[in-house]
Length: 211
Image (tube, rainbow, N blue to C red):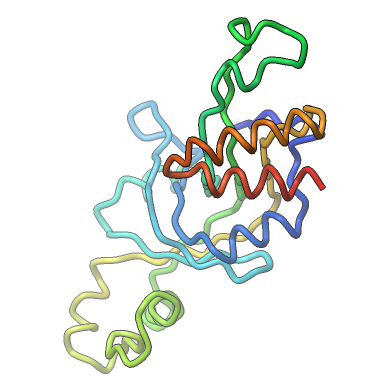
């Protein structure tokens, strides 16, 4: 099973990882069971209830089902707010910037779960309804799928539902927690100046976790 190195200064609090899951609803489902010698990795949207349940559905031909037959344990992994910290920026104060060691800042969350496959038509419809209520815009006719609707009834056999029970969470926010406040402020200034695609989000977390 996957393991993630988490230093004490990088460990995210429950409030921090819950905040991420309130905003992020796409990740990678990784199986413990293997197919052809490898785990199955499925990029997927999901719906987290804020406590211990994740709902999603996948196509019936997906190889994930074979892996779950072998072992129902899975990891739902998310990565976000990442950026590259240049070597010179990361050099300890008083050392030659050319000898600095580059690093990455990022948020990583892994939900360790037990998967339950859902094939009952009404239960699958309920999972779909919960997901579509979350993802579809208000007023969309697709927010309320029903087995009473002919097109929905025809398409339901093509999918299987998944109900994940979260048994543990590994959550990491690596944003220079082992650096001095002055060093972190300097890195934040560099990120602000570079202003790359994810520099702003990483900088915000760097500053927030520095207080």
